[in-house]
Amino acid sequence: MRLWSISPSYLDSVGIVALWREALLAQKVLQGYTKGYRDHPQLIRFRQSPDPILYIGTYLYHVYLEGVRRGYRFDACKILVYDLGVEKLSVKIGQLKYEFTHLLNKLSMRNLKKYKELVSLKHIEPHPLFKVVPGDIEEWERLPPKKEKRLPED
Image 1 (cartoon, helix red, strand yellow):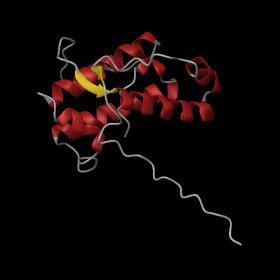
Image 2 (tube, one colour):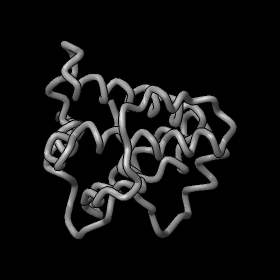
Image 3 (cartoon, helix red, strand yellow):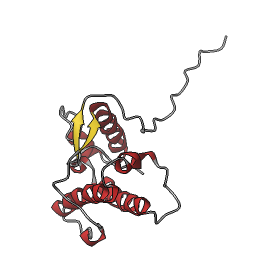
Image 4 (cartoon, one colour):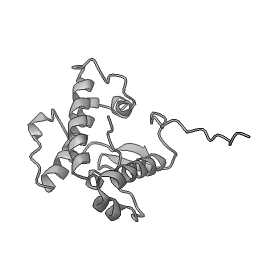
């Protein structure tokens, strides 16, 4: 599950559809309707919000709006509740940069056109639910294990 902190406008068609489905799943998880994904770290910031269902719904609504802008037929009736006036959640600039690089790596393999469109971007916009604050990668982010470099054997 990846609930992107970056603007949904950066995602290609595969990414925006996946985000829609994963955010709907996150909404079910936060409602307590699933057995899986309950401890997923991407949900921490929503659980820590003043109203997790409202915040995931508002997150979803922004994804819905991006889908509509692109001509997709996402069903807004699946969003339980949202409020475009909620106080924004914080996201650290390091997290935004990490996710943007992660997306670029994905796009370099599956959508070269979108990759070329984004690769020289200097300012990364967050998802509209978030405000950017100073800091490194979020504590809840699961980083891939670093590959050990082996010295050549004699």
